[in-house]
Length: 130
Image (cartoon, rainbow, N blue to C red; front, side):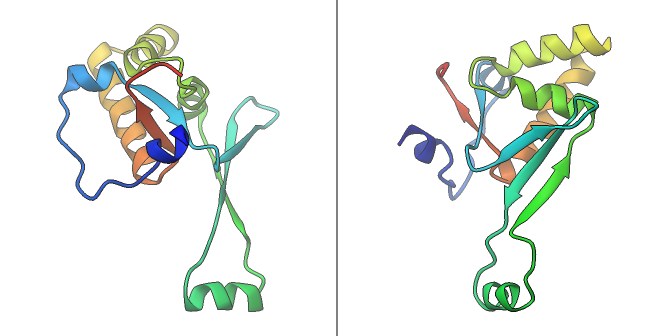
């Protein structure tokens, strides 16, 4: 029930300031499966559900029912930390230490990546630790 509430699409996203974002907990969508390859990088496995005529055509032409997305090293590190136990700020700190990035650079890159994951429905944010 909680996950359904987290992943429900909002009509218009509200404006949130930087400090509020840093206190949020990114949580992976349970529908998105993932595996690690031999290099330790994550591959996201996203189900594809074509609608309308595309659903009908996908059954006729036996189109794939899932889409695979291979993350790079940085993306994999972030994905591993989107577990509902780490705040965005903790992830920024991890990136600055591990990859020797400036904090501003780490924040900018992380916010952009998390925004992409959120728009695609791969993650949601929680105000409380899960």
